[in-house]
Image 1 (tube, rainbow, N blue to C red):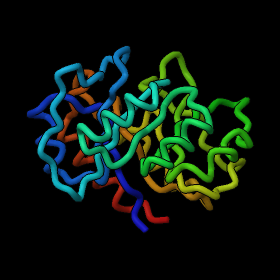
Image 2 (cartoon, rainbow, N blue to C red; image 1 turned 30 degrees about the vertical axis):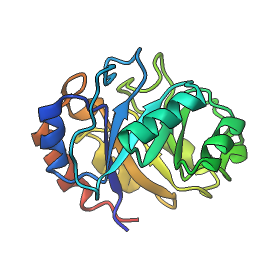
Image 3 (cartoon, rainbow, N blue to C red; image 1 turned 90 degrees about the vertical axis):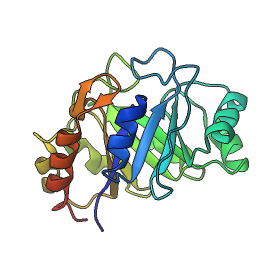
Length: 209
């Protein structure tokens, strides 16, 4: 199958429309107020095609608030980018929520840590461990993914751009479902470069799993 594409960190209304016109598979909106890509308190979900899945990104947020945002903005998925517990994922799933659970990867990461979440998530997302909860604009050693049991399909994130996306073709025998792209296609935090996204999509057209 083709590798899917998620564009994350959207907030500007006009830019949302430009990016949505390119038909990524997922668009991510960050509901974490310490992020430079935070959507803000007056955020209104843009009118985008129902073929594009809407993802709300949260960091260590209360379950009640997540459920409220899901209902308010008709989110298709929630992406949990903090230290959320297995119990919180179980509670969210019991409320009909589809979950993408993020894990930050470095050379010391033990992939056994993801196993207890497997019954409650639709996907994992593997990002680079850094100073921030995502948006560190750096890649991790993708060879580490060979240590993952590949049971749950995953999004690959962390510094992905047109410059390095072709190297993903060298990754073999992984259950990689999608690429999550943020700073690698940005003009400024929260504003994406449409030309870069078009180039990235062209490069991704040869990524077959």
